[in-house]
Length: 113
Image (cartoon, rainbow, N blue to C red; front, side, top):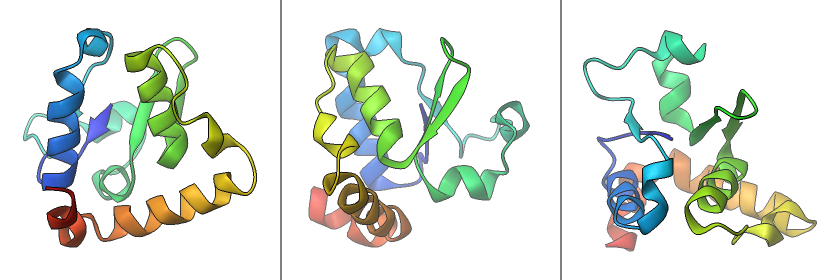
């Protein structure tokens, strides 16, 4: 999981996920860390900061947006807890909501304290 460590909302989510029993199956990589190299993922730092990214080693696939959360949570929880986000009309609704939150993540972080 690639995350924005400068974002309070992202940092809080990562802290929660790391506290879960199956979190050892996920590598959490802070893209704002000085040693982070975005070239490893074929993306620029601004692209990685723009939206959520989860890289699946098993399938060699980069997942973004809500699909990234689905893959991440499936790994950590062992079930697809966001299954509904794959089906209309929830798929587009969830992606639009995610897009808004991702764009305004530093401004809306206070809502999730």
